[in-house]
Amino acid sequence: MSGAHQAVRTARARGVALEVVALEMSGHTSYSACGIPYWMAGDVADGDRLVARTAAEHRAAGIDLRMQHEAMALDLDARRCEVRDHATGVTSSIGFDQVLIATGAAPVVP
Image (cartoon, rainbow, N blue to C red; front, side):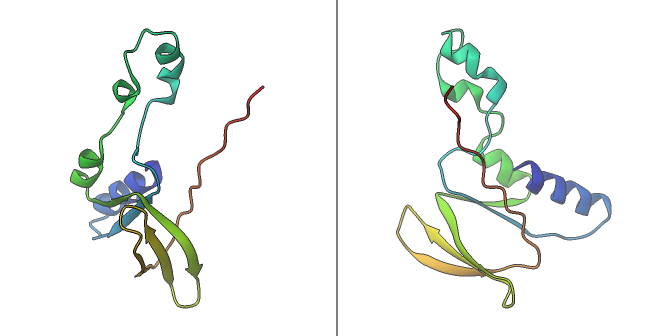
């Protein structure tokens, strides 16, 4: 989501219209990871209090945010992305000019 916001801000500063589509496989978009120790310690009541930006706030900033959507395949030659909507099970295709892949990370348990 940071990359999406940066793209929107940069385009606006240059007076350029930009369509940004963000696919988020989960139901969460932005949270304060640095607050997790406070949540675990009981100082924060629940994970919802760690939300930095809601989905509505991302959309209000001009990002076409699609929750519970997963990029399944990229066709770089055709500039198409195969997308699965996990809420409905429907798979579709969307076009793109440029792609930013941000897969996240898996935690390592010590």
